[in-house]
Length: 116
Length: 115
Image (tube, rainbow over all chains, first blue to last red; front, side):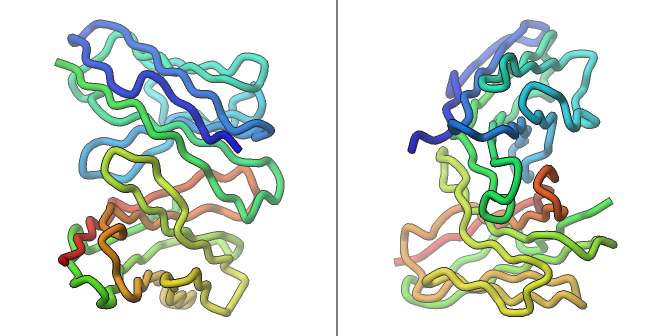
């Protein structure tokens, strides 16, 4: 079974530039999550989708971050304009809606963003 | 709001020895799950072990076991017969009951294994 795919793995940009990250969840997983992991900290949820609808985006900085999940499969996370403090690893995860082994999340390898 | 606290930023263990990583959490909910995730350097986070709050029996997975103290809101991970491949960041995480809840993570514990 293929895992959660993310790209690009690494990205370096100047502040005020824009960047986009892509995620393809495990086939059949209806729930998709984007987490931000700043160095030395645990991941923090940015946004959660159920199919193509948003379940929770309360911690998404909406003035600069946006995310979409068209057709309930792939998702894109965009940052525009980027700030220095956005330097982090952006993790995508997916899970089954109901049951699914007690709510386990499956993670991708992450996209590491460096803002200069 | 739920919180997860890992008070040990770094831990070290000798190969083949046993180590225990600590985690405490705060919640007013009665239905929830607790997890330990492992994150090797530059690699994806993977589930180590899971505990359902309604189960009194502590979960075990091969060399990994937990000590779940519900009243004390404590959830520690014990790694027996430590191996070099166990070296990684370990995150304790909380998830509300109901499948749509997201994971709330602690800050992590970096585990080093000495040969």
